[in-house]
Image (cartoon, rainbow, N blue to C red; front, side, top):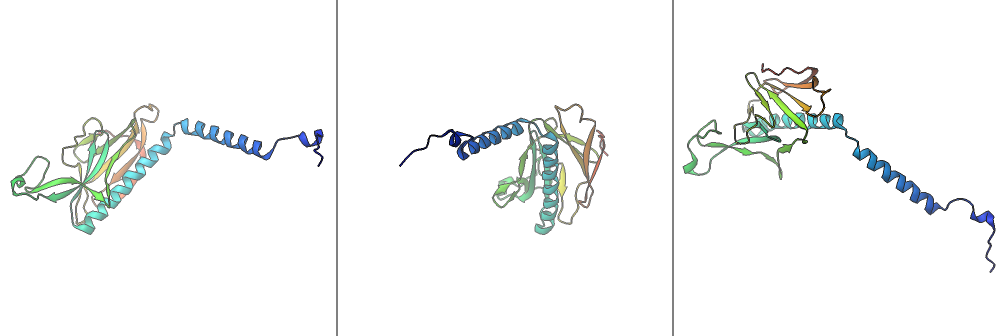
Length: 197
């Protein structure tokens, strides 16, 4: 058997070499895309998570007949449910409990508890008719929830918005989500009103 050593067969790249180059270019471009911040998309994702959970919680309150709450935390938010105390020693009314013999317990859907941590540079502001609450500053994890979801379908009316505390240009205009007393969600975009009501 004769082995050819002509230069005609030595031109170009092998398929393996081409595939290696394509894989390296793809990995490099993926690393570049992952390093670019996408706060606009991240903010929309956070809005969507909150809106979805609010709608689910309002529906869950009607289906189960339980009272649910939305509570701001220093680093995010959680959904809690009002439960009856099991022991006779804990029947007196506490600061966190609106009714003697009951306490707020972290809600769970299936195996998952409903607690969400916001990205480090995001702040959630919640405005009710009478008060303003900010995650990180006025949020108390031991306090009663700021928003209630009642079994009859009533919801504490409130507005909320998210802001990226590092992005000064986006501070003035944000999407504001309005939830009325029937749990109907509406979105508007405009100047942030920092006052309740």
